[in-house]
Image (cartoon, rainbow, N blue to C red; front, side, top):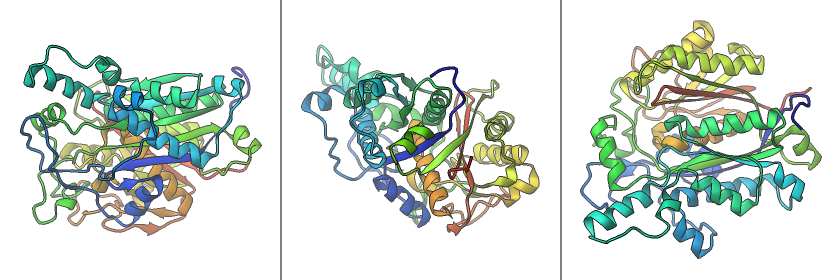
Length: 418
C-alpha cells in the first residue's frame, strides 16, 4: 500500500513484434546476429509516397480478438494486445483475484496513436467522396485505445495510462510503471508501447522533415547506419513490445521466473529546442537513473543507445554518455544501437530496445551495431561495430531521446541479493 517501504520491481514477462519477426526471442536472436529486418517498401498507399525502405512486420498475425475488437480498434492497439499476451504467457500471471485486479495497471506508450484509422477516415471523405467516417473512427484514432483494449482483455482495473512523448513514449510508460509499483500504487503492470504508421499521411510528413535515411542501393537492409560516418538518417519501423512488471514479493510468492530487475529511471526535458537533441539533458537522465540505482558508471557494462543514425543525434548521444559516465567509464562501456536492424519504431522504440537489453543482460551477450563499417570520428566510443560480444553484464542501460526534448533512461540489473 502507499506509504509502505519502497519496493523492488522485477520483470517476469516479455513480448515483442517488429520487422525482425514475431516474439521477444527472435528480436534478440536477430540482434546478436546483426541481421536486419529492413527491406524495400512496396506496400500500397492512398497516394504516392517516397519511402524506398522500411522495417515492416511481414508475418500474418493472429491477434486472438473478437470481430468487434478487430473492427473497432486500430492496428496499433491490436499489436499492443499481441505482445502483451506473449508477455503475460511468459510471466504465468493468470486467475488474479478481484483485489489483485484492482491493483494491476496498464502503462502504454505511442507516438502517433491510431494513425491507420485516421488515414482511412481521410481517404473515405476526401478521396472516396463518402459523406461520413466509420462510426467507431474516434475509438480507433484515440491515443489511449491500446490501453483501453489491454484493460478490457485483462480486466486490470488499476491505473490505465497512456504516454505520448514521441520516441520516448514507451520508455516513459515503463519508467512510470516502475515508479507506480515501487511506491505501492499498484502491484503489477503491463507496460510497453506500439506503433504502426505505414500509411500515406505520416509517411508524407516524415518525408517533409528530411530525417529519413537515403537507401543503400548496394544493400537495402543496411540503410540505417548508426554512429557511422556515412549515416544518412533513420529508417521507419513498425512494432510493439510489452513487459510484465511486478513487485519482487509478488514474483517470489508465486514462484515466477525473474528476467531482470529495474533499478533506476531518469526522465528529463531539454527545454531548448523542439527537434534538436541536447546532450546536457540526456546526460541528466542517465545520471538520475544511476543515482536512483546507487551505481556508478563503471558498474554498467552495456548501453542500448537511442542511436537513430541522424547526423546531430548520434554525436549528441556520444557526448551525453561521455558527460554522464566520465570519459574513462564511457570508453570502457559496450554500446550499440539495434535500430540498425529493426528501424526506428518511434513510440514503441524504448520498449522494443529494453526487451532486447533485458535478454542481453540475461544471456551475457551485448548485441553489435550492424553496418558500422566506417566510424564517425566524433562518435568515438565502443559501439561494437558489426558483431556482438560475450560480456558479463551485471547492469545495463537503455536510452530513449525524443522530439520535444524528452529524455528517458532505464537502468536494469540481474536480480540483486538483499
